[in-house]
Image (cartoon, rainbow, N blue to C red; front, top):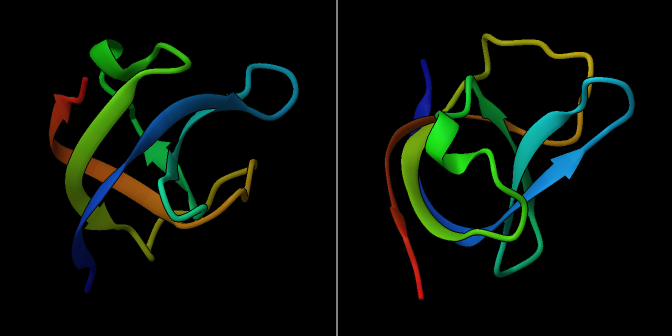
Length: 76
């Protein structure tokens, strides 16, 4: 169904109009955050996120795999 992953990187705001929240990993991949928690809705945050890739979710932004956040922590 969906793949569980752990990713470290920075939060960014992507897209036009209302836009979407994304995680850009330290290795350069971009993940679109599915229903991003309020605490993650701040560009520039360094975070570690554990979640699931949602292959069953389509989005307008289409900037990369959709990542549903299960757990996160801020990184210094």
